[in-house]
Length: 101
Image (cartoon, rainbow, N blue to C red; front, top):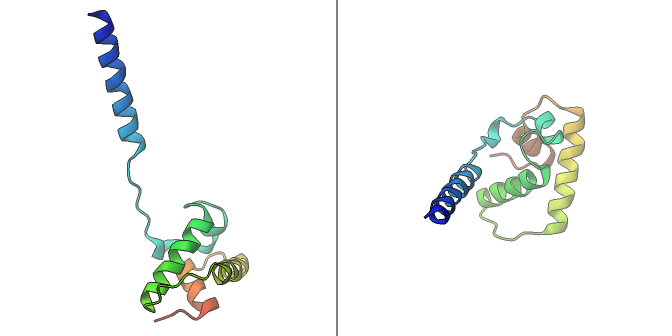
């Protein structure tokens, strides 16, 4: 009986911890600044660059991913952001890569 109680208590504890660890976090990318991007304040800049690439590719109806271009574009945006830390990241992308509306 004691083993069952301990097992059940441990199981419930694990379930509660795991469910809290999997909480979803949402990010409004349109509000990320270059400074936040450069300093990993929101997420890894690589993840954000990949998301932005997909976002702008979707706007152009382009399903192709060119990894070399992706890396080069991320470098260009990063270089631009170093000099424009207060700029909104999406505006920096549109300025450096010409991906505006």
